[in-house]
Image (cartoon, helix red, strand yellow):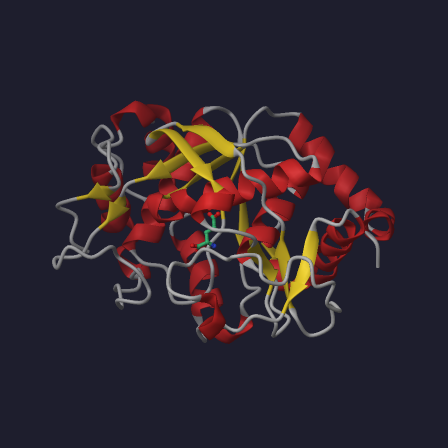
Length: 310
Ligand code: GLU
């Protein structure tokens, strides 16, 4: 299927999304991967992305990033949905699931292939060496695309962007990373491709997410540039740490958000984001107050948050 076919088939749905979005200048999103239950760090991202969008009279969308099927953790998708409910977040459109959109990512890959911007790569992990910069070994081999990884050609260019919290950033993909994978040999669409395509099709204008994703941003800007998509506005939040000084993550078994403690957890999230005290009680009222008082300039500077050991 080509992008044109996909767009033709889904034209009314996409048109509707665009109309909804064009009424507002700000569309933000929360895009968790169901690789484990949501934890306090995820709540900080949800609260900040929600309040930042709503405080600017914008829209806030939820997208489940579930393309990496082998890494999906049983039950985490339903935990995410129950959290959205229990914390009383109100998404402005139906929640989308990336696993339902695989044809679309394939169509975009085909478009890149027609423009000679991607190539098949047969290198194994072992062949890549230890510096994590891909040398472009397969770039000019003209390998068949079937059952191979697909890499995008990067160019030797400095990519600058201004992050609202982390300041000016610069990365040169050719020097820092080399051509990167958009589709794995096992057929899994890489996060970088899916996120760029969906941010565009959902009309996202602002990305608010954890600072652990800061170094993915240049790749996403570059892909967006190749595809002719508009640039987004970025804010990367400092990360909540555990008592051992590690970032809260599914890998180091951060505690799942306890839905019976929604108000206390929301209170703690606003405190971690250094927002004015929340005096109201239920999650819905707390979020409303949080939006009214939202001041992104109060968020602690840096890439880690201390003193919120949850
Ligand atoms: N799905 C990613 C994660 O859970 C976040 C993607 C994004 O916000 O761009 O880490």
